[in-house]
Amino acid sequence: MEAQTEPGPAPRLDARGRITLVRAGVRRALVQDLYLRLLAAPWPLLLAALGVSYLGANAVFAAAYLLGGDALTGARPGSFGDAFFFSVHTMATIGYGSIAPHTLYAHILVTIESMVGLLGLALVTGLMFAKFSRPTARVLFSHVAVVTRRDGVPSLMFRMANARGNQIVEARLHAVLALTEQTPEGEVLRRLYDLALVRSQHVLFTLSWTAVHQITPHSPLFHKSAADLAAAEAEIVVSLTGLDDAYAQTVYARHAYANDDIRWGARFVDILSHTPDGRRRIDYAHFHDAVSDQDTTAPP
Image (cartoon, rainbow, N blue to C red):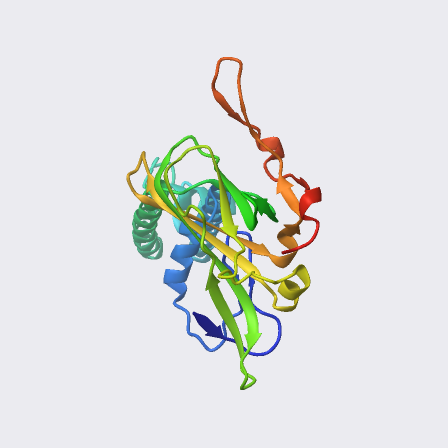
């Protein structure tokens, strides 16, 4: 599998495995893109965006009411505050009755604002429902991947943990090595190589999972050093999918390891132990820690 690219730096991936590209020559659908961005945005950012939009819309309508002159009964002439809060009452269909429109201009503006408020409420309700009902995985990926010996075989390893209280059943893991290579014809390509894992499926992903890729003669990493991977702008993209046991829906998580994130001749610190009453314990404080392995100081 390969993707053609122009000579020069390869596309970079962020920590969630998303390609950081600037797309040119493609017409974007603003409304659909905005909806997807809001759906994928963190809750604090989404609530802040909705709050700013709500206040901004009311400010615009308040200014429009002031343009109509003395159009509101019960409001102080020229008072932006009175016009703003009347707009809030109208958009939210509260209607206290202390301020009311008394000109045709104001009545038309109230009609328009009421429709905007109803449409806005419907859109926000749909967005909130979609975001609440959208199952997401909170999988913790180790910050680094290590190359060491496992069962006597040089292996690339990284680990994951389910940081949420739910369980992910029938979890499947897929790892891909991306390299920038040049064909004999001089064409620069971004080639993708599947990394076969010792275990690519997990029936019940509850605790931690250490993924192991054995660097055998069949591996695309065979006889490659850290310098070789740096020259090829190597990146390892990892994707995990599974079923959330609470929602019974598919969840996924992604991560990317750049060449600088690979520690040669190192191993992960053990994080599993048992409590005095026999329960298993995971020490997340050392989840990302890797220590030097004196037996594998050189790449295979």
